[in-house]
Image (cartoon, rainbow, N blue to C red):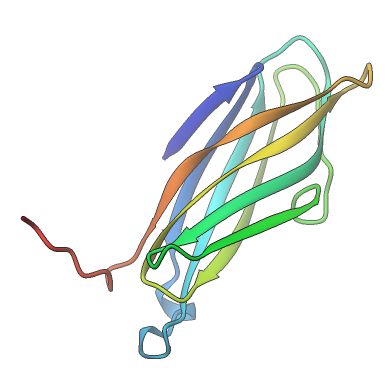
Amino acid sequence: MYISTSKDITISVAPIFLEDQSDPDDDHFVWAYQVRIENNGPDTVQLRARYWHITDANGLVQEVRGSGVVGEQPVLEPGETFEYTSGTPLATPSGIMLGSYQMQTDHGDQFDVEIPAFSLDSPHQVVNLN
């Protein structure tokens, strides 16, 4: 589990390699990631947008920007949480994801919260020990 807190919002991420959706012989590796967003602050907030920075084992970078998450722009009152699961494919057996969510208070103030960097690891990654 990877966790970060910024501006009273805690983001927890748990990546899961999906063997049944992957095809290593065809350089196709798929992960799901479970995200939990906790509002620990005094204001009601809404998740308005997302940004992902995805790097595969060859250093190829994909950037993903969009409205909300999984088709929603959840509103979290103080003390509330929102959870969702999404996924990403890579052409390599490992990679790293990180990003941010754009949040907006019920007063109209916007701010970004950090999504912690998390490792996408599969059992197909060759590990060299020095």
